Image (cartoon, rainbow, N blue to C red):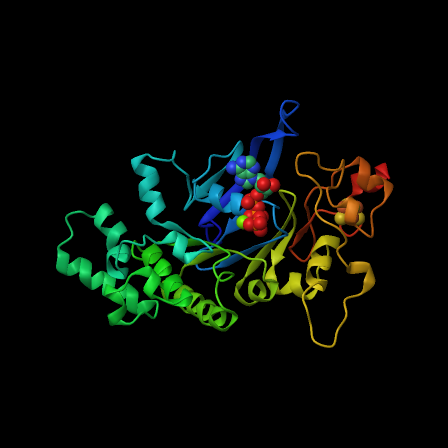
Length: 335
Ligand SMILES: Nc1ncnc2c1ncn2[C@@H]1O[C@H](COP(=O)(O)OP(=O)(O)OP(=O)(O)O)[C@@H](O)[C@H]1O
Ligand code: SF4
Ligand SMILES: [Mg+2]
């Protein structure tokens, strides 16, 4: 037996299509939108996978698929070596205790009528109705302290707290069931810049103390670099580059990854003109033939219009889907 650890989360060929209406009534017609198109992701225990890409590329849909909050059209997810159970079943509830979602907007995620202590303890009460009140209170107090809330916050209501404190309540509520994985969907983008670093540091501390795995979805590539061990870059529902975070940020290979990283503002440095991202992503209902990025890619060739590149494993361990920067023998022969 090899000693390599088993992934906590292992998603294979995850696909989700939505049926949408296109055009104006009465001429509107049904169309298929491939929000997530055959992606495979792995998250190891205690590690962070950063998920990046422009708005609409399928990050949140992927997050919901990973937790079984949305059923895939094809493909599937294994959690801790077992397939995700059907939503609503007892087995799914057991699995869901171990995997929690944290959203961008803490106020929207909290119940305005419940005090901080009540909402943090709510899930524990539901899952363990026989728990003595003193033990419930002790666990709420312990998890509140772990996320940096003060004892006097316990009786407050969400609107009486700052944005950063509310996000701490959301985290405490997610952590009370002692999960092993958090899917964090833009967890800091609604917060003041001055508070963002505190919440990021808290997430890093919690990961180390509790050996939590994270799927960290964010537009903020600087933060993704700071928190992630691995990164997956998505474009129009597909992963175009994935691998070790440090390697990917230091030496991006896919033209889209290069363009995204070049767009990170750096004082005193202008991005090279050939990496500037032009225009908007194409309509996901009517994506370009071949490589979906070709309409914005400075390196596109005739082959890119004919054949969609598949993810190819490079010698350094990363995977890249590009005919030019990660060519495969069959594609070269067809060129
Ligand atoms: N329930 C739905 N019905 C129809 N289309 C949907 C639905 N949910 C998502 N989509 C579409 O799927 C695509 C991916 O959406 P998703 O919200 O996953 O993107 P995202 O990467 O999270 O974007 P953002 O960065 O803006 O949050 C988009 O084109 C979106 O309009
Ligand atoms: S396959 Fe072609 S169009 Fe797509 S990213 Fe590579 S060079 Fe650009
Ligand atoms: Mg989203």
